[in-house]
Length: 480
Ligand SMILES: Cc1cc2nc3c(=O)[nH]c(=O)nc-3n(C[C@H](O)[C@H](O)[C@H](O)COP(=O)(O)OP(=O)(O)OC[C@H]3O[C@@H](n4cnc5c(N)ncnc54)[C@H](O)[C@@H]3O)c2cc1C
Ligand SMILES: NC(=O)c1ccc[n+]([C@@H]2O[C@H](COP(=O)([O-])OP(=O)(O)OC[C@H]3O[C@@H](n4cnc5c(N)ncnc54)[C@H](O)[C@@H]3O)[C@@H](O)[C@H]2O)c1
Image (cartoon, rainbow, N blue to C red; front, side, top):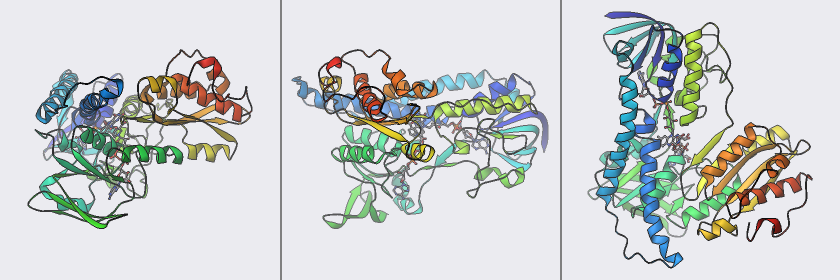
């Protein structure tokens, strides 16, 4: 058995691990980055980037379909599934290539290949032939799709996000399980590319939406495009000669069976901590076996072990993985001089159409923290000027503010350009702006942000700060 002694070992060469490596390397040259499977990161290989590429193709198809609304006739829309998938992979490979170049810039002696697990709190077994003794360890092992047992009956026709982008052709039909973030993004994209999609959920949740009125509106909107039951009663999933048969109870028709080419499991993700023999790490775990850690230092208890990215389940998003990797790597490098870093305002965007966005505190958190001392400003985009101009006038925005202080606390949106609106609002929360201060900012005409102003005016009025919002805002043009 080979042995190696290092100051810092980082497990996982995904986004969090690579950023942790760079941060730790500023403090020591005696460190290793350990990768058990593929280089290239989940985000670039099978996550953010290929999913957005598929969505971009779907958006193009959708724009052709809706062109006649503007009096523009483009003839019959034909989707070349093989070409769609080829572009997804070609562009995906471009992004993965960028990551691989960064990996190659790391000296070879600092990169180890092999699955790592804890033997002792400071000792890792890497693959079969190497033991690494590390003064400090960063766990950055990411997450993987969770597939409920009954879906495994789909056998060779079961897909998870990792497999979908490898299909040579677009399938004819897909049963999507899980109307969460991944299910909605991929399911809607497939549907807009001409794939017959039916979506099944449990418990009624939809994407990341926490505000009930917005959830109901979004559900109605998605259901107009493809069948979606967020609280489905699925009786059986079975592979047969033709594909996968799904038996489920339909409100009107009773028990129904429908056959699909594939089942896509988008039923949540699990952190990759169970394969680490974490019980040997001598750190405290929660009741699901995940390490307890401080989200400002990423440190597990008072140990020299840190955890970053999806592995800790806190905010499984790319920019958070990078921030956490930086904090964890810096602290592992400078240990024992551990320092707390600041965390950014929560910001999440789901790339459906309309998009879903959440910023700052959720409605439940506002309720908890302000115990009734808050108000909700609202706008519908149905009659919003710019949204109508571009034919994207669907959706709602709810903005939350605190009584007394007038502080802007958070927002949830299902609507046009939510990815951009959410950034403005997140920056405002992080700068601790009041609703009145936000209203002092310039608003151009005619833009979607005028809708944001309408919601903020409504909020200010409810907080009894500033003038009441007029039925039709005369200083902001028609339908603003
Ligand atoms: C379909 C999809 C779409 C997404 N879209 C978005 C998006 O639009 N925006 C966004 O912000 N986020 C998105 N995400 C989430 C984002 O991809 C993740 O939050 C982020 O990639 C997590 O990075 P990470 O470094 O924690 O994990 P990873 O990049 O998964 O890295 C973990 C690494 O650890 C390795 N590893 C695991 N166990 C071991 C071990 N024992 N020994 C050695 N190595 C090990 C793995 O092989 C892997 O390479 C998406 C995710 C998916 C699945
Ligand atoms: N745009 C983005 O930022 C983006 C995109 C994709 C993924 N992500 C990240 O990846 C994470 C994981 O996404 P996800 O969609 O896998 O998880 P999720 O938690 O968002 O959704 C899982 C969904 O599956 C449902 N579900 C669970 N068991 C089921 C069953 N047996 N049958 C039917 N439905 C079932 C859940 O009710 C939920 O709606 C997200 O939380 C997000 O952080 C982000």
